[in-house]
Image 1 (spheres, rainbow, N blue to C red):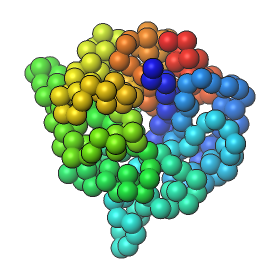
Image 2 (image 1 turned 180 degrees about the horizontal axis):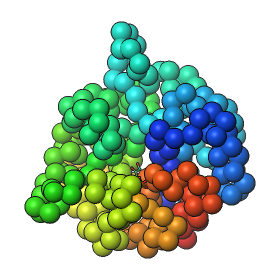
Image 3 (image 1 turned 120 degrees about the vertical axis):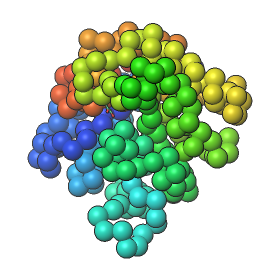
Image 4 (image 1 turned 135 degrees about the vertical axis):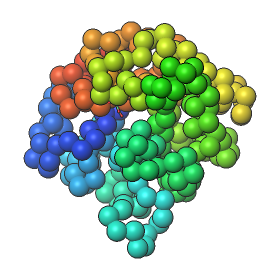
Amino acid sequence: MRKKIVAGNWKMNKNSEETAHLIAQLRTEIPQSDAEVIIAPTFVNLAEAATQLKGSFIEVAAQNMHFAENGAYTGEISADMLKSVGVRTVILGHSERRAYFGEDDALLAKKVDAALKAGMRIIFCFGEELDERKKGEHFKVVERQLKNALFHLDGPSWEHIVLAYEPVWAIGTGETASPEQAQEMHAFIRKTLSDGYNKQLAEEVPILYGGSVKPGNAGEIFSKADVDGGLIGGASLVAADFAAIVAAAQQA
Ligand SMILES: O=C(CO)COP(=O)(O)O
């Protein structure tokens, strides 16, 4: 039985003081959880967040990282730097990184390799754009994104991968994929994993849904057989909403 995971991607929100305040609120609002709970504040607040959450079940993740171990990459952050402040999980492949910072499948494959080499866990994001869904190409697009960035990995590496299906048209738009659309895609992803690897691996990899998940729709989406939780944007910035989504995951 796969454990439910709820991860909050704070994107470029919350300064130092606001980060500490939101974390304090989360600790009150989420006193315990059977679901795994992860938050991803901005780089500059990761060290403080990790210190504040030491000993708590809430884990801290980074929103991105560079593929190199170190060197002349102005403005970038390495896996080792993240680990040195207590961060063991990194979000890679978010559609905003792909769209605004030119991250393509080949670059993401390098980042995936670097994160795994450093012993980190990856929340790997992917998903189709609206015009791709309208043209009926969403399965093909998702299959390509997965194969190009991840299918060079050996089986055991997948123990460190969490997949996050985030249809771009549902991110920050208030428009969610219906629970049926999410389930349909998640089942397709498992079939793709089963074909590329094996059935057991396909059953074990957690697959999160992301895109306008709110307290009001989380329960129904999370109750679908192949949906193992969510990657939450906007609603992760409001403690009561994020707590309600965590509660929905525990009940699903
Ligand atoms: O991009 C997302 C999480 O990574 C989803 O964002 P929203 O929940 O704001 O739609």
